[in-house]
Image 1 (cartoon, rainbow, N blue to C red):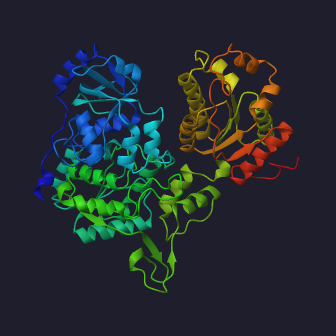
Image 2 (cartoon, helix red, strand yellow):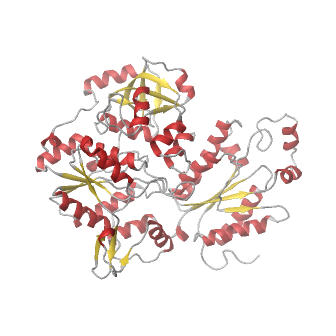
Image 3 (cartoon, rainbow, N blue to C red):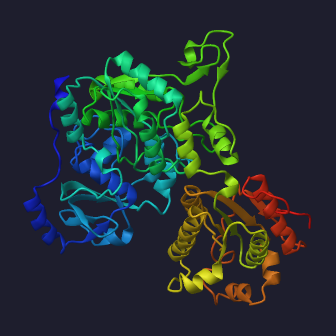
Length: 575
């Protein structure tokens, strides 16, 4: 296994060449990279995605989607593509160079564009993720406005790494890890992939894996993009560091991987294996439902519990890294120890706390037993995720113009302010249009941008422990989902569909807007000339016909109480 100590190719040029190329890049068309694209670019440049030398060409993309292989036959299961907007793509032709910049405008790389095409995203979803189902976060990314409709392919010339201000000493490139293993004389290294905090079951699993493989252990968590709603990486890294001394220092290393996960189950397991091979590992732990996204639209798991292990084993020799398979670990009360689920003897008492149950206990401030997790980890989780009654949250009203959203939102705001305890901010659609989005029109693009601005402000309020009440029309499902994901990473989100009928909204219309819309004098008017996509599963649905706003606001308070977001006497007192 001596090859793990050999450096792998990187795509960076020398500092002298980079300085010259940056000057040249100033005259090139520039693309501002998304968060996912920055993760991809970093691993392209530092060799984490070897053998790739850039974003996939169309031939490579088609081959990867259909066969999990590049066009030259090399194993590669995941499309690594640069998706851009129609507007940007219009001015780009194959043979042209473009500058790739981060969010601050710093040029990270130059891309020599060789291909430009419009992908069949439904086909990509079916082939790569197994279903064209919007319940899958990566499929939602594909079809949502987050991902551009045009793909560009071509080689990358790296000028500098993306800047990370957090945990710099723990961010190792593939070659830095290989050099570290060489320095310590590690010839067998088993990698543990995680996007969650480490609990006692994970410790037992990793101990067993290292012992079985007779290898040293690399704890290699993802700190790029994971599943929406996951615990933020700052909290997770503090948890990892808090329990690192539970591992033998001479045999264990913690390093962070800036990967944007796709939650692609079996394909993702193969992909993770190739990435860990590039980082110098010889073994890789693949557990139950590896990189699975959860339930599909029918309430069933996207992938079988051990599909990822089966696919990895099928390609293990070609990956060049050995799988260490594991079943789910459970605690046996009589033995006061963790065991794989398939090793439990009849009559033994099995204890387990699911992720859903852990979140409930954290939200309600309930006890988390020592057999499940480490006190240091629980303390960090409680710091970042206090009980729901102490967290910020967003109430997001959506409905047609004239449905009563603003009236109910104002009534709710008064009731919450009367109760006190947390600052309350109302982000009404008309007020936001006046103060935050005055330059925007009413095209779909501008409506989406307006709602995302509201979502961003609400997420900041929620993150800082306040209450945000939003009352825009928000007609599009995909945009509301994007806002939900933005806010749920910071706190709780309550979607309220004010389901007043179009006929009733027209009857209430004091400004005569519906009449003008039917006469064609107002273009792109929701409910008349532009669609309203009603929420399928909001947390609360209100019908305001023959019901006063105070009653509706009271129903919202009751829902907030049932979610654990409000506590104390009088919060939802009788009307």
